Image 1 (cartoon, one colour):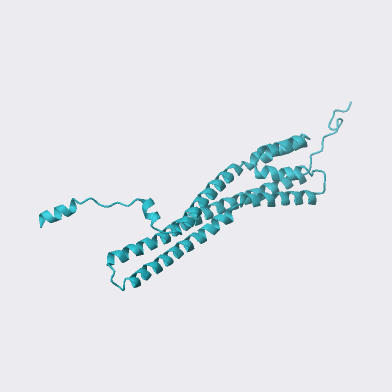
Image 2 (cartoon, rainbow, N blue to C red):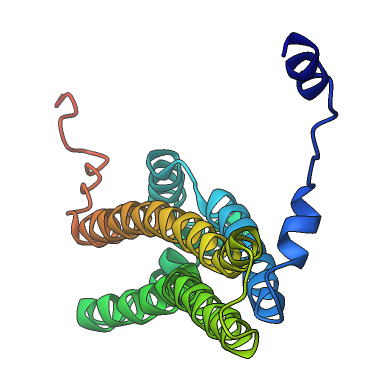
Length: 232
């Protein structure tokens, strides 16, 4: 008895690699793999884009205010353009219309803001679609796999080894597990990136409002040369 138990313990365990497991999922693993690659691409691309779009807004507004007070509107426009940031492009649209009615300036800022928000949210709908579609593709693979398994059972007239049936079932469940993993990851990053975009939009709106207030601020009048002078 002891010798038998020892022999069983000494038997090498059969290991299955992740690639081998995935290869057992059937043809629907191909679209799932494509969805996973697309999700990684969108996450990496949006992460980089949003990180590059961030900027210290207080410093930007202070620099613009200083340039405008010195009467150098061209330098202020060039400074905004040189930032390469969404907020810089939005304020540049307002600076280019200085001297026009404040309503036109606000409209230009609003239109530029809509464009920048569109670019910030670009491809986020892809990630939302992947989060919803991947689990459904996985469930479809499981259903078709189970159908094939029971068709095989019927063809064998019920003379099926339980281990064979179990093997067919776990192979069918691979697509569900894969689809759920892809969907969960895509959904988590979607919510994180949307939260980041919402914070950036809030900052852009505040910067635009502060910029308009800056333009509407009264300009201090210079004192006349003889004002406050000593009379003889």
